[in-house]
Length: 371
Ligand SMILES: NC(=O)c1ccc[n+]([C@@H]2O[C@H](COP(=O)([O-])OP(=O)(O)OC[C@H]3O[C@@H](n4cnc5c(N)ncnc54)[C@H](O)[C@@H]3O)[C@@H](O)[C@H]2O)c1
Ligand SMILES: CC(C)[C@H](C(=O)O)[C@@H](O)C(=O)O
Ligand SMILES: [Mg+2]
Image 1: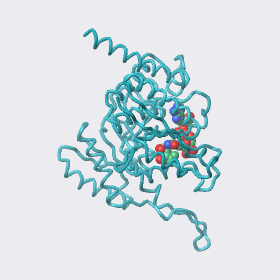
Image 2: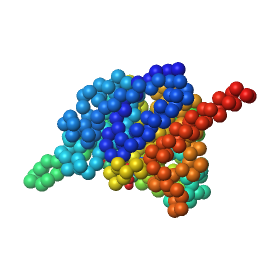
Image 3: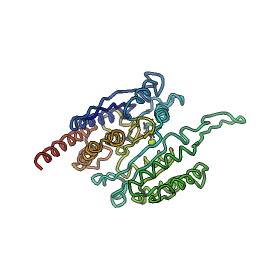
Image 4: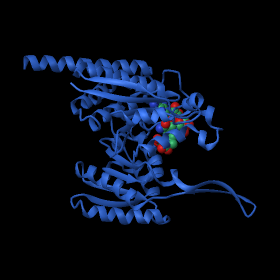
């Protein structure tokens, strides 16, 4: 039995619905495996702006730093779209990533046989797809200075800066190689080296890091080609490593190989403190509050938390097996349902996954007793 303190930041829109679902699933895991999960809640994003006047209140950051891991839903929504830059919900997300040094964002993309017909791509293209996008999360265009608007020679001008230190590139590329060395031993480093100096340095560093991993193949791919290859032949990938914004865009694209943005989990890892787990999707204002959102991305993110932050492999497997089982049984939220299939709500999907976890436990227990 273990006791773990989990900071929960539901955020805005469907963030609240999907984190509630993931917590219920974690509670089922606690029951089945006899663990104690203590959940502490904090404000982030639009709701934090409304209640505290800032997208990342100091008390939220303190609570997260003192936790064993953080579970985040999503931030943002039209209510705050017109706000000045420092009062945008998304600033809270960027700030927590930077403050907690969550530089390595792992976004696994895995084919679910039962969802083969939910993807717009043909089954033979997506079958057995299994790769991880390693996205740099605390540098690049999102954080470079200068950034903003000014008037230059009487003309309105705007600037965003793509800035990386050598060490920031080295550490994320090393994470990708370490991961690939435990998987299919191939790293695809995605950049725009035909145009950007930052990408040329990224390539050089990738070549240097590759020397330390002689059993891992390194290939370089330009980001525009990578966007196309993800659709043409996604099975070629094992680990994709790329800078912050390229990774953001490619991972939303890659989610459609699994059938929906609502299927893709992520882990935002730090080497200096607790890590954070978040679905890759946003607050989905178009379906927020309607009990329609697919909670699986967040539930799978909580499985990543169990495995990567707590070392609870069996427990993480139980969540992933329950998700598989429920999908195979035909349960579908609206985003992955095809014509004629019965659509379940967020809550029904969560209930089915919880039941599968507890049933699975009962079956394994019976097998252990009578084997
Ligand atoms: N990590 C985050 O917090 C995060 C990520 C992306 C976008 N955002 C923010 O969310 C807001 C909305 O952005 P957007 O509409 O461009 O992206 P989005 O990811 O919120 O939604 C894009 C589309 O996917 C659908 N979708 C997303 N998640 C789903 C789920 N779990 N189940 C079913 N359908 C789902 C939505 O209904 C929508 O049609 C913006 O304010 C944006 O900045 C936040
Ligand atoms: C909301 C936004 C700042 C965020 C990002 O671009 O990182 C989101 O799109 C994500 O993928 O987590
Ligand atoms: Mg994104």
